Image (cartoon, rainbow, N blue to C red; front, side, top):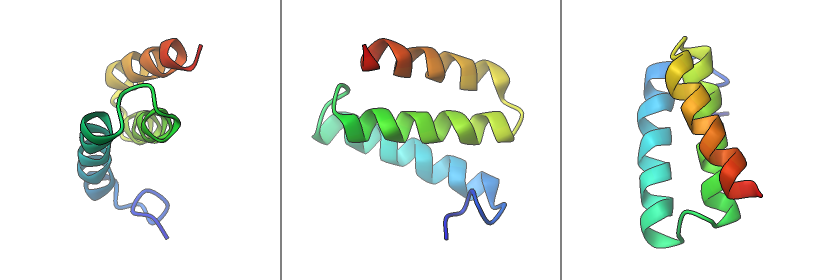
Length: 66
């Protein structure tokens, strides 16, 4: 079970940010796994009430997905 699903949002956010950074470095920004990780992080931001960060990341996901 994930940190996000268990309500451990601070831990989920920290890990999500690390995953996105590593994915970008290792497999690139346009890789489907990176985009999925960015989308997951946007969901975490949204749940935590960080709406500006969530919306900005969602826009990036949309741009990279098209």
